[in-house]
Amino acid sequence: MFSSEQNSSKPMKYGELIVLGCNGSLPGGERGRRWSRFGLVKRPTANGAAKVHTHTHTHTHAVISNTSQHSVSYTLSWAETVVVEYTDDNETDMYQIGRSTERPIDIVVTNTGSGGHGNGPVRSLQSTISRFACRIVCDRTPPYTARLYAAGFDCSRNIFLGEKAAKWHTFGGQMDGLTTNGVLLMQPARGSRPAVWREISVCGNVFTLRDPASPQNRGKQVKDESPILLDGSLIDLCGVTLLWRSVEGLANSPTSSHLEALRLRLNAARPQCPVLLSTLAFPSLDGPRPRRPWAYMTCGHVHGYHPWQGREERDGGRRECPLCRSRGPYVPLTLGRVSGVYTDAETPSHAFVPCGHVCSKGTAEHWSKTPLKRGTHSFHPACPFCLRQLRRDRPFVRLIFQGPLD
Image (cartoon, rainbow, N blue to C red; front, side, top):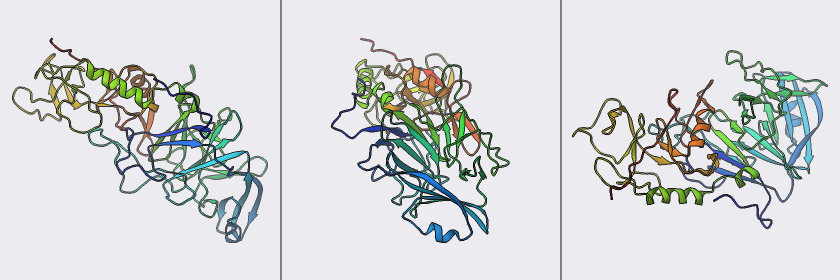
């Protein structure tokens, strides 16, 4: 039912990153460094980097051309650049995330968004994700803490913040800055403390979100918060949202095989279409299936696909339920297949509105209260399987199945 404990013969895993909005598979296929799910595994040799020197330089090119060391360049003006030099850190592993397919990037991500029918991600004509968006640094010794930092090192082992990027001097003569597109982090809610989005700097400091009208001005620093990733942390890279699951969290989450067992259990109950009196079944994969369940999103009654009253409804996709006469969207149901986004291992019983992705009640409640970034500056709850924005008044509905008449 649940993930087994980590096998000592396998490489030590720090955690997993899950791409929201693709329901377990990318539309263009999964290969190389482009996947819908990434496991961060302890490297054979540490590749971390720790800063050692900060100095002002008027000949930036000569410094950056030294590709044997990592550095961060803060351009203050055309004549002045502050360069922070880094040295190898044998105590940490670094994983870089971005749109670039060049070798410094360990995890290649592309834009995801809601499809017209909630069937998965669509690729934007122009990506809004930075080529070298962010980096995650994990301690190689217990408790294997993972930290998020904005920006990633390029092929020259340099992070470059231009004149227009938000940057500033910190206490002690150090430098810090924010990337143009921004790297956002939302920690899971703890007790009465609500979950809120924060922005992470190049040095890993935490800030409130910038004012969209003044993107070069940083928000207020939140000193009592850190960039340490917790089980359930969300990372937004301005075009893709990643969910972090810790090893402990995964051990208490349902596995893919458990979700498959729940699908078979639903089908074994032989749910019936109350109009056609035919047996319905959730298919093993997405796509049109003759026995695929459909549901009315207003009332939750489950049917097979059928015309009602001898005609197809054309009122914006709204139809009248034959059982209760309520009107609303009539959509095909699709089981959520990404086990990492589930909050429990209960039977799928609820569907997100309006996309029709099916999951457990606890999972539906959790994501209906979780604001995800929509566009440039707005945040709204969305389905984790397709990223389609949920209805404000009724983000999910309890499904009502009719059993066999015999």
